[in-house]
Length: 200
Image 1: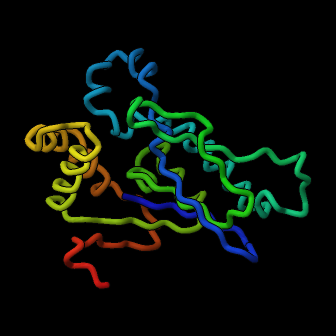
Image 2: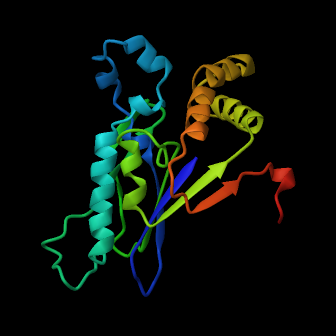
């Protein structure tokens, strides 16, 4: 998993975390693809995201950070449009446009997603737009177990064997891709530990 952080000066620091899951292609878009069946099976792979929309959104955030945010004295409230981001409705299995509002007093925006530090075309344009690049790594077996349990907990799969099957067909393929193509310029590498190993 990767985190990309944008910061702007503020007397009262306030942070918000956004997942890029809201930038998944809608099912109506997947339905139009020539490889429709594969697109559904591999949903969550880099090519099932609207990376152009992600870049446009992060450019907007970069401008927001550089001009001092929504409370900048150099602009009036009439000149500044609120920054809205999509979220993902897991029940509907589709993004929800403009459902997350960046608060006006936010000084830190943390973007979370597997591909924010992916060294592939288009994706590799993201790191230069943010202030801090954090890569969170975990053992592949630990990832596999966590993902299978997450699929069960979210109701995506009801059987653990099917959950592991889904992980092997899709999630682990994506994880191995990311681990093999981390972009240059990561500021912090973090190793994710099991709860029993964590230092309290």
